[in-house]
Image 1 (cartoon, rainbow, N blue to C red):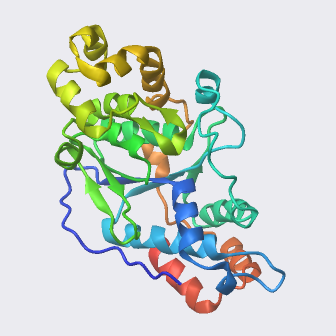
Image 2: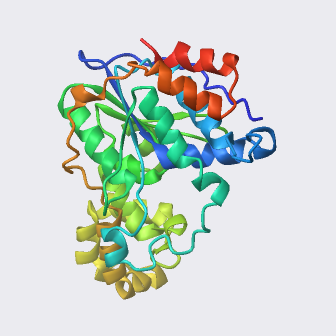
Length: 308
């Protein structure tokens, strides 16, 4: 079992209201599934539980360290989104998720409900859009807002009140991505990051960029011209093969920028004040843990972190 432990780091409260933690549920579930072998985590009936236990363990590590006052988990929903309408091949090269993992997602959500933790899905949208909306709500309401996600699209949300906790190869290697960290890594601001991604493309999402253009050239152009639209407007001033490639792919780049823009104003039917947690339904939790064949020690660990 991978027993990654989140390392301590200093994190001062910037806002009087406290901290909101928004979590990319699918990202965390996938990471947990591949970090822990199902050989050691399954019930006698054959139900895999590795992602369930890993999810709760990793979440508890962040909760114990960051001590959020509000908590919400965002999930994707089955079926396509508006991005697939704009770009039919969007995420089309990804392998199908293992059935052993998919069977655990509803149970993870049952566990969250028993723990009094809000989880949110929005048909037609990705979990990333739910994250963008929740993070914006939190920042606007005066909360120090943390986004736990392994998706670089979340970098566009970063500002004085929003920080992305970005996992490294191991979950314990969470990196605090603030404005300075984004600039140090990519040489652009968080608000400019989607422009950079539109030029570079995103292999994981099957979004093609300008051939031959990576982070370096994209950042150079952004710093020279200020924005993607200005780059396009002045594309005739960019010489060489890369300039030619840009001019040949302007429509694709503009489409990429529409696809990678997170929606931050969804009607989710909740306010930040609704995202309290700790009101555990002990009876439901006990039944669920028994069905999962999690012993008393695991139950105590879970309750210690998430109950009031």
